Structures are given as C-alpha cells and as structure tokens.
Length: 339
Image 1 (cartoon, one colour):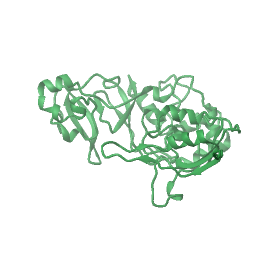
Image 2 (cartoon, helix red, strand yellow):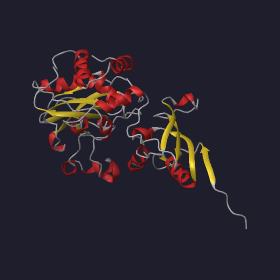
Image 3 (tube, helix red, strand yellow):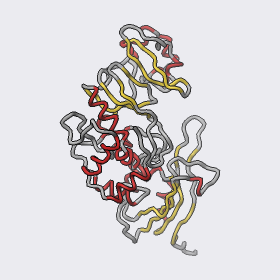
Image 4 (cartoon, one colour):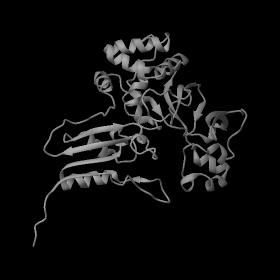
C-alpha cells in the first residue's frame, strides 16, 4: 500500500462565505486557513482582509489568534478589492497571507496598511482610557410600558416582540413617534429613507440611558468606505433630552456644552480620525473601532486648549504624542480636513 506524501505547501483562493436565504452570509475562509495550516508547513491564500482589522464576521477569538501568530504575515494588502477582482467590491479589501510553521515573523498585533501608521500607533499610550470607553449605542424602548398602551406593537417590533433597540426603520414601523414636539417627550434623531430627521416620543416609552439627559456628540454608525482619511458625515452636538436610533452612536455624557464642543472638535481632528482608521476597515464604525483613539480630558483643565481651531488642536496632539515630522506629514497628506 503506497504511503501518502506530505503536503509541502498550499496555495489558493478559497470560498469566502456561505450564502444563506434566512441570515446574512457567514464567512468560511477562516476555516480554510485553519485547515490549510493543519495540513501543510507553508500556506498562502488570498482572502478578504477585514479580519486583519478585527472587523467583519469572523470570530473575534480567531482574529486575535491570527494577529498574534508569529508564523503568520501579510504579503500584500489591497484596500480596493477591484484592483485584484475588477467586478467584486469586497469591503475592507483583500490580502495575500503567508504562514510558515518553521519561520518566526513576529506577531502582527495591530495591522496597518502603511508603515507610518505602525509608528504612530506604537507611540500613543492610553493612560486615561480610550474614546470607546465613553461611546454608547442607540436608545431602547421600555417595552413593558409600550405594550401596556399599544399591545398591537408586539406584532410589529422585531425578534418576536423582544427587540428593544430603536432600529433604523423604527420611525415608519410604530405609531409612537410624532413629527412635531409634544409635552414630556424625548427628541429622537434617526433616518427616513436616507434623510436625517427628528421625531418626538413620550419619555415613558424610552429606557434610561447614560447620556440621554446629558450633552454628547452624535456620529453616524456607518460612514464612508473604510479608507484612511475619510471625513465623518456631519457629526453634531446632542443636547440633553435628545436620543438616537441605531443609525447613530453617541460619545460622552457631559455636564456642560463646552465639553461636548471640545469632544466634537476632537473627533474632527486629523489625529483622532487617523487613530480611528487603524481599525475602521469598512463603512461600519461601531464602538470597538474607536478603541485606539485615546481618551482626552475635555474640560477647561485639559492639557489641550479646546478653544483653538481643529487644525491648531491637531498640532497640539502631534506634540503631545511626540510624532515625527514624517508622521505628521503623512497625516496631513492622507487625512482630509474637517471644520
């Protein structure tokens, strides 16, 4: 009986996802990477690159395993997948990976598409925390109160009547929202079709929330394509008693408007958006993509003078984190200005 020969290397372009009629498509390419790693000393595959940014739907544990695998490296990364596959737009780009069990490349840790970003990321400490520490999701219904007044809403609310979140299409789904101000109401920012709009809802129908009665900064949860340097789509200050649907995230729970203004200036800086870009590989920018943006003191006692312009605040941040001239030049060239 002939002996099986060892597999020297595996090279390929595996299937990327499993298509399902009832749920969103589930990735499978990570399973092929694991299987190939078990079968051969050397493997090289081209796959979607979202996992390199700890984004997408591959398991977080698997992402961490790959990013900390000293035998793994990225050979080539294309942010624009159409450079490789002209008819396919793969959010987050594509990458050719290489793994060799007998070589130590050093773990990737935080993947960056540019060497300048690697240097910048290494210089930024987080003694005061991360901006993601003060980022909050959408507001939620108090379903017990809603169903007491509108029992028919159970047939409309998602997840069999258990969905508490103010989902993107909620303004059109439930008759709880008013087009004009009413007494004892919260003002909710959301979308109808693609247009931003506000609706008012009885406060009794909304659960308590860390910043509902505070000042905050409101940013879109989905924005751009994930390319480095993109502007944020019209961030704004949220006054007390203003909430948001799933379309948005809120930053901070500030006692004063001045702190919210300072935070708004910060998220507009080229520095903060560069740090956001380290993990933002697609149009989606949920809370976790902000975890490499260092948290600042937004009060008048801060080491940053928030009364200055956004451009001047950037210069203060460059000095604070000891960026080199080449790194500053990279940010100034690649990141679009916001005012």
